[in-house]
Image 1: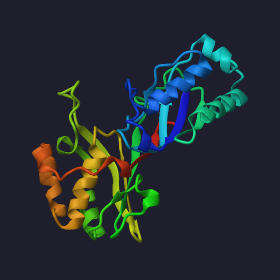
Image 2: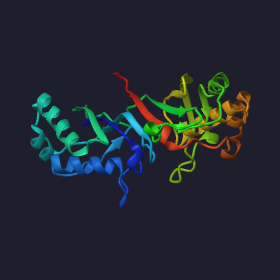
Image 3: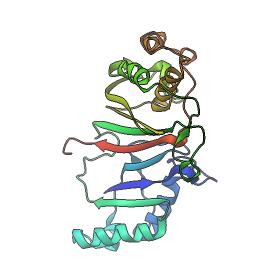
Image 4: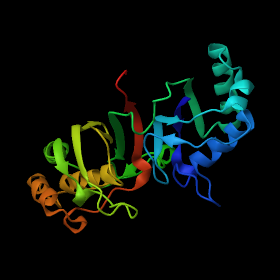
Length: 257
C-alpha cells in the first residue's frame, strides 16, 4: 500500500520511530494498527530529521489478510478513501494523508523513487514573522540572491557531497555521490525560497548546501569557493549548516509520475 503524506515537523523528533519520543512514523504506525489490526513495517521515501516538514512524503507497506479484510479487500476506491479519512481523524492536524492507493508488490517508497525535491524557506528581514517562525530560517543580515544563485549553480550535476553530508554511522563506506538536477534561489519581498531536486540526498545535505549559499549571500564566503569545498571532501571545509525548521520535502518522483 502507498500513502502520500503532509506533516508539520515542529512537534516531531523526525520521521523514524524512536522509543520514548514523538515521531511521524510512531504516530502513523499507531493509527494504522487501529485500522489494520497490527502496525505494518513502514518504508519512507525521505527520512526527515526533527523539525523538518513535508508536503509530498511517500510511505509504503504491506498489508496482510486481516488488514485487507478490515479495509474491504479488493473493493478499492471507496474503502481506501474511508481508510484515509479514518487516518486523518486520528492524525490531524499535524499529519495529513493526502492520498492512499494499493501499489504493485514491487513498489518501494524509497528504492522505487527516481528523484526527491526539497524547498528551504528563509525570512530575510530585520524581524522574524512569529506566524512562520517554525517554517523559515530568520536571517537579519541582507542577502545577495544573485551571489547565492551563483553558488547554487556549482551544486548542479554529479558530485561527491562528502563535504555537505553527515556520513551514516552504520555504513561508513557508503558512497556520497549524488546527482543534482536543479538548485535555485528565488525571492519575493522578505521571503526567499531555495528549490533543489536530486536523484537522492544524503543526511543533512540540503541544509549544508543552504548554509553555504547563505554564507555566500552574507559575504562570508565566495560563490567560487564551492568547487574547492566539494573537492575537499571534508565537513570542515563547508560553512555551518542551516537549521532544520526551514526545510520541507515537497515531492518524490517515480517512473510513472
